Image: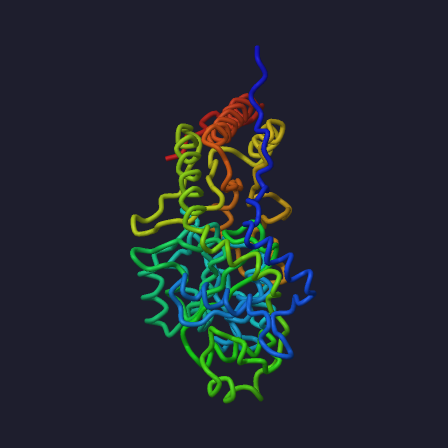
Length: 416
């Protein structure tokens, strides 16, 4: 009997930085001018040009580039008027830096339940607005899954809640004809290595309101060198708030911007390939009766850099068996339902720092069987098919073993 095929691929491997980005980065390193501002004049405008180009790409008036996606969220909350002690709503399927940014702003997270399709539950959102008195929703488009933005926007408008979007996983995603990131007062993006754009670390805050943009520029740490911003609300808007806005020193470096600017032009190609990869793996996974895939709304157009699915029939020990079998065959799978947080995965029950949130039974039931696989843009069709094959076969082995365990449930049910 032949050995089962292994995946001989590092799923954390990003695409190389484009040649133009490498060349400009080398030029900057040779000059030593890595700071975004030139004290003797605007002799390097890499960050300012990137801000201008990114704002145009996502269709917002202003962009402020910062040193991480988490800092972009923090700045969004600050300029949205969040004060220490305020309640801020956030969906329960997200990554730890998102509630972390709320705490960074001195506020208190209020976690909203998610549905079986991994998006915010509008019914619980409405209830939590009423029970908490929160006036801000930080909506995380986690792993690119898009909630019903018509409904979310309607709820927020009706209740006087300011919407801030975390678009770290949703650059180039759409709801209908509107790009994700255009629905809220402000939106935050990430340029961490595993996102759509890669500078190792980096972030963007985009918005349309001039005074808020002025505050964001000052908060980011402009040292009054405002004239070097090309995406700007103007000198008068900056002057009005200059003496009352603290410097938080969250600037993006010129080096990061140099690597990112050529990647914007590559983004349509990357997104098209990522989505092809997602569809191919999802088609392969759907061949298993034990796998549940999310059912996005017809208006949602994703921009996927990873794939998620659930194995609701298996108990925790069965899921652990799936993970171990897949790992032996070269496929790392992340699990949001693990007892302990690991790597990039965690659940609200791990966020003790977020304060008492109640049981959040529905969210934890969803996360209990939620699997996550990175999908680098360079995956081949054969590798996509192999990933789906490894997952299916690992689950079949675990289902067979679970049904043979003494005291195990004899009526394991396939996914609906």
